[in-house]
Image (tube, rainbow, N blue to C red; front, top):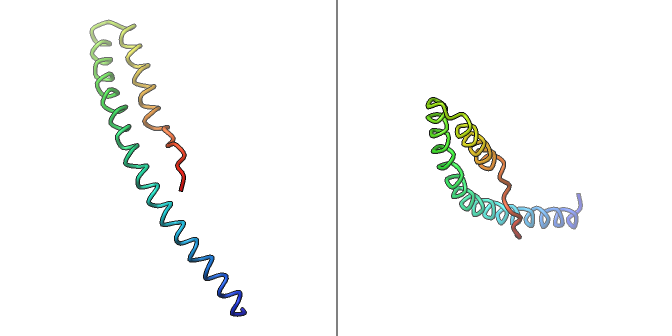
Length: 88
């Protein structure tokens, strides 16, 4: 491999390394934001699922079903939340 080619490859690898460092930092910052949403969706989900179980045993099937539906929505939001696009 010629010296010019080797230098170009080295420069490109250094550029890629710098991009990876910035991308890693951006992912780390995004994870901090989404950790908050995990609690925002998770705590009501736990409370509603407990209340739905209690309502089911007290013979309130409509209330229990409604709460269970809310729990399903909250849980899916916790699982499938897609972070917003951030610029490098």
